[in-house]
Image (cartoon, rainbow, N blue to C red; front, side):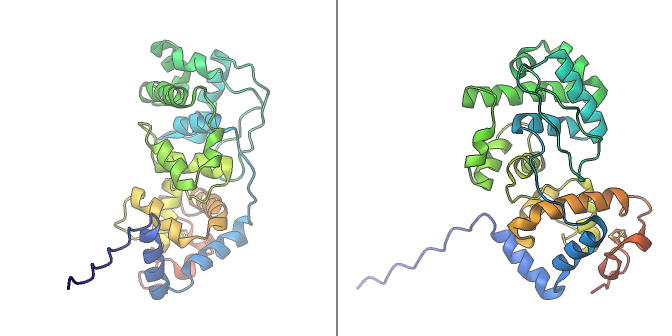
Length: 272
Ligand code: SF4
């Protein structure tokens, strides 16, 4: 008699690495994630989500922030509005406390067709004040082209009907869009439970010891999904980014003003 075929191992679920890492961290440093969230909330409060901008504008603005300060990205975005004015309704930018600039003025989104089809040297000049224009101008056009070719127009509202991972996969299939940019758009436009890791978030998480020192930022994006509950992602992102900007600076972090000091491994490698 033939032996019964062995059950095939179940395919790993996307978030398994995050879940098993979270369990290990909880075993060795119980309560660390909750301690961090609560500590940051004592200083920055508990932010409530509201949509920041329409998703296409958010994506273009986020591309403009890549390796540039948020204030410079704002200047470049306003320049796009002036050079390629759109005819849609004026919309408000609700930057919230995680944003490093002053916020965009109320205004219509740029004419995305005009941006996509603009002569490249002209577009490069328009966004030059934002920094890295030679890389970003073709990236903007390629991104807009992909959206139009796949969707027939420039709207990204359909992403709100997909799961967080389907939407992230769709976005990261576009050249030059990584998990951070995709997660920013999905978190801030749709409240999807993803946690974008920029350099500030990354620094705080590693120093406290929530992220392992050897994990890449790409791996970190998956690990955090097991660490924080879906309804904690927005608060975690906004408060970690503020903490990295205001207290846990890259150079000379202000340990004395930090509510995370008692459990920070950067200060005490044996912290509980
Ligand atoms: S104690 Fe210092 S290094 Fe640790 S999180 Fe706070 S500011 Fe950063």
